[in-house]
Length: 590
Image (cartoon, rainbow, N blue to C red; front, side, top):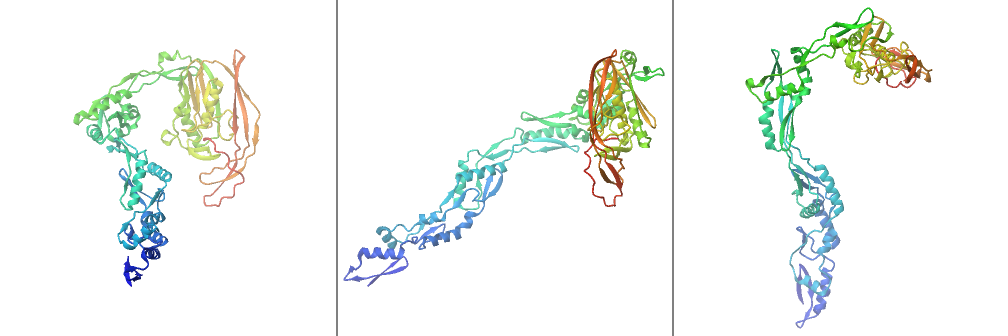
């Protein structure tokens, strides 16, 4: 009996009298017995031998050996950036079942079976990979948005007295056509190596490149910050340091160039420049008016013509000095004459003939009130408001700071009394509101206290807060208005003088929408004891008469919140539970 070796196996084939007993049919049956349903011997996938394995075992072997590599994150190179993304998130998967099927057993026909018996050639099969294109496109959209690099022009900035170059950046984004990116992803995934996939991108070049940025630094920015520039004015030298200049200097793009821009108006307003300029040249001064013993407004001091440096003149003087060296960084600045608004001659033409109104507010004596009310009245006294101009409390009095002569006092904040600089000046605001009210001029901006204060007229009172609430009125009388303000330890009085247009009669309605106060507890030292008072609405009005005939009337409605009862406890004492909700936030000051 002859023996035939078939791919490492032995098949015993009986031979009698030189004739093959089983013939080809026997060989076929033997091949089926030995290789049927198995992967052909010599079959490999990426060097992994799956020959002779059943499909299930071959798939398990590929999952074990290839699965981790194909599941690893894929490195993506987008311009200069490298990102990693999960293969599954990109819609990429390894199909080991299809890979084994492709490897196959080679078929079950006689030719295929007999061929496997008598051949031993090696066969390498590529893995089968799948791509969900919709999922891949969605993932690429997200990656593109997250990695997009916006184009940025080269820039020059000025900070802390130094010039700094900001390098340009080329804009980079994924190419809008995703087909090539999908093909590159699929090919890279099939390779299953660690090399980044270089995705196609679109680039946008900056208009201001590195060369232009360097030129701007060398030719302007660095010389500008190399030292102070010095202005000469009326025999004085006024240095302007780089630390002052940098806040008013920038370089802007014009086409593909950077050009210097000086904010001359801002530089002129900078205290480091404004103060020495003001000291070098006299400002214009209006004629000073006053009220004589007969109640007539007259000139008490003459006007003075002044001079000023305009923003244009300052810019024209400073710009050429910025790139100079040595003596070339010093230059003169021009001035122009400024005439006063009111002169002794023009005062007679202002139409200030009589008293339009007078109003007095009394207040309890307290050192902070005497100081703050007196200082505000001092700043207001002598104001002249020409026809069509607006008078502003905040502009006239300024911020209530210690440097301006104000002290800490009591004001209303968050629905209760508290301490703050300038507390008490609302007595002056209320006095002015009523003087304006009875003079018949037009209110522009005003606001009442959050809760009612008994010493003020209901609905005819005003408060002010720097930066948030002003008291403003328009002189629509047709003639100039002169303001006289004076105070003592317990009262403040404001009188307005001009040419009377109307006789004003005040009206007042009943309290409505009455609401009872609650109780609250505060903590010392900021807490101030507060007595309770109901909240309510009230409407007041004024009737305008000419020659005894009513020509118009207008109403003002004010809403007052309840004034809660407030008791104060030491800072280390436990605060009791509130008896009622806190009052709505109010507007300073008392």
